[in-house]
Length: 265
Image 1 (spheres, rainbow, N blue to C red):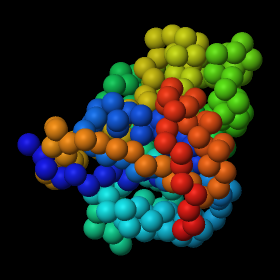
Image 2 (tube, rainbow, N blue to C red; image 1 turned 60 degrees about the vertical axis):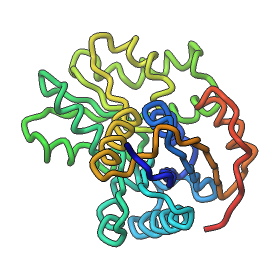
Image 3 (cartoon, one colour; image 1 turned 45 degrees about the vertical axis):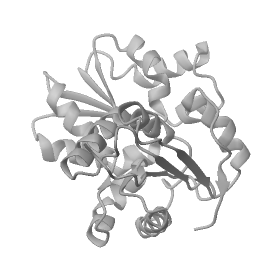
């Protein structure tokens, strides 16, 4: 039985990482969670590698001040550009979002025909393609940037005909070519059903879900689980516009959160 009451730290450049928090909360209800959204510096996708490494390092240092026991980088850009670096300089367990999704995709894809969708910057980084090729060089990979999906989601248009048309527009070239699709953006789990409805028969890989599964496994392996009787709590911190974060958090989590605190890093 675990006894480690320290919280899990989760950060993203903005709001999307809340899908990861939601999945971790579902699988680890006794764990306390601290979420940090670097909303003043979003997006990370148009920043240089060195800048992303610096932002990621600063975010981790902030979470370490909160005495977290494990850190989840719920940001595709930070995961692709900074994860290797920060793992070398920090002793705490640190997870990214790319590897867990790739491992699941390789495991379930019968035809080795895997699609990846994400923001322009994530697709341009080729992070998922490179990790997929490392795991299985015989896989055929079909990548597609979907730049308008995030704005649509953040506007709350997740049940609109417009969104359905947009999904069809972006994914029409993938239909019939893939048997597995990685959702390479932490916003996309909110429209997973719309995507699955269009790509019938395709296995949809939710990176947020896979990260949560890996988080639980690592806590178990390292004896870091909280006691099943632990009274968990959640804290939210942002670097800009806490009111907007509060509003969008309800869309992502389907419930109100405590008012996020405005901080500098």
